Image (cartoon, rainbow, N blue to C red; front, top):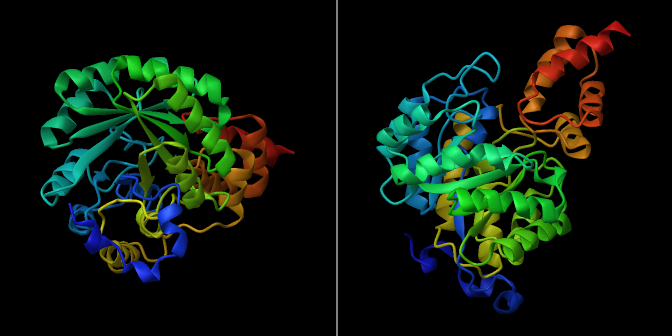
Length: 359
């Protein structure tokens, strides 16, 4: 990895309190999800060339983990979730060919991706699988986590929509993933609905329940504008793996922006061993250029996702339904929030749009 001196600015530029910051000296791992969660922003149209360019830049900057698949994980390319421009395996192979230091991760949602998909992705070059379930359904990850451990992969349990479960109950779900073989368990703010103190409560609960043998991660969306703040709060509470995406590319208002997060961590005195300026250049000169006109923004729709607590990837589907049935996007989102929809219930968007159109 890049040495810390290459990543940091000279100390006089950083704030005087860095040495006393709770993150000072903390070693933190960064996972960049531009090429997975960011796929939502481009309607899953990343090409092999896109993946090569972004992966090459992230690797050179010293980012520890690069995640690559369809936005909805292995097997996500479908009518329900949106067809991708390239297959998952082609994208994974393209990234593998560029990564010399970074580990390569893939997302798998049981019910969308299969164990056969996992085996093929392993053959294509992944090092890590992140098995994602709703925050109350960790039991459906068990067979996939066990299969991944048997294959020899590093394993991550990904508790999506974590705001919909209490801290103590979320910790019990995390325990299920740990016992199934997860090396790391994530608090996942899929809706971008949490504030920093709520993140802290959940990370503390996981830390207390899981002990020191399991690493804790944080995946923050930006629908309430607190993505980077939430990731920083998670780190202060004990999380040691943080997700981001370049320019915040991702579902809804996007994720915590990797380059902003790493710069903020550097200011706080944390050790990521990532070259900050080089990472900023990747975000600006590679990602922003290739995704011009598709970068996420904190607009009315994405803000309502966070306010109503809705899965971030619902936004583009909602916009299409609003246009098709001539109803207000905001009305659909508020009603979806009232019904407490979760990932996998995208068909409810059409149901709600039809009901609103008939009134």
